[in-house]
Length: 226
Image (cartoon, rainbow, N blue to C red; front, side, top):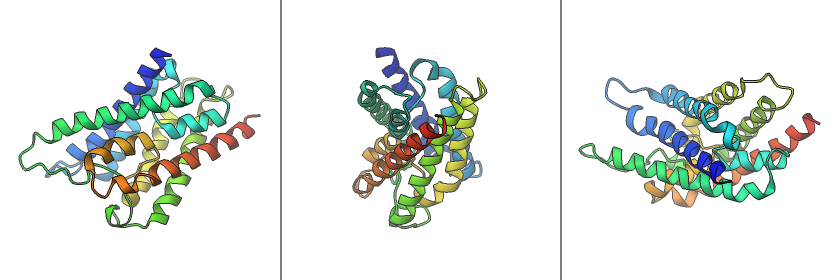
């Protein structure tokens, strides 16, 4: 179990550090910024590389919504659920702390949104709470459904990481303007802690919606694979 929790900590750290780091440090860099598309690709690459590096140890969840979905889908033991989620949240907070130490070294640094998730005034496109709620449920549902299908016994071996990484990239291409894309409560928690002010009160949505989407996908995926 210790190795599994270490893998979940490291994988979630890498996802938040790489994905949110691209948004904080590279997305808006003058003349060389990677933009929304670059951030979307960065998130996809983090989960893709993390799965191939650590997935054989823990299953490569790196996300409480994925853990819940795979639990309902019969792919994860009940005894692993809470320890996995704790390791993921700690990994996300540690990664956000590392990013803060790097980002704050730039002259004139202001924490601002710190790549956090939000709706209304805190949404990049000022989308409503309902928009964020619906988008997070739908996108997490399909993310977990892709994971269930790509890792099924009847699926082609060796391609799961690629499918999952590309799916997360696609999700970010859709959802960044809406709420900065969560589909991962741990990722949302890590950055919200450092952003503070309005982001922490909105954090509930980025636990409830991804969890709901993940649970629904896990149940459907189990039925489809039966």
